[in-house]
Length: 82
Image 1 (cartoon, helix red, strand yellow):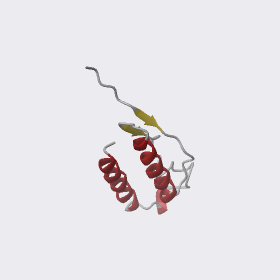
Image 2 (tube, one colour):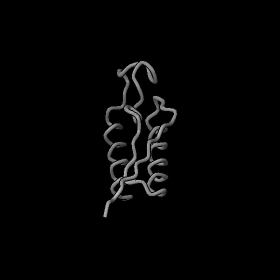
Image 3 (cartoon, helix red, strand yellow):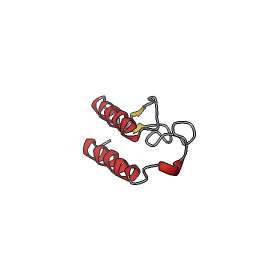
Image 4 (cartoon, helix red, strand yellow):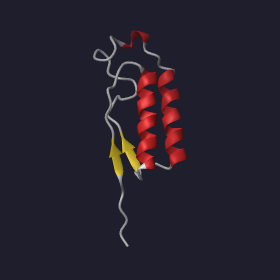
């Protein structure tokens, strides 16, 4: 018997606001799992945004928030088994 994998590819308006980006990522991860996806893909830098495009520079970047938000995403993915 063959098995198939189902992946969701998600895109949203990435900004320099990690909290807002995290909210999109969590929302779409829930949606992907609810629609039967085995995995979910987001664009590169979708959590922090792009330096000089979404925020001026890394001089005031919240480096502590990045791993904290990443751990939140990983925990949700583990919980949803996605």
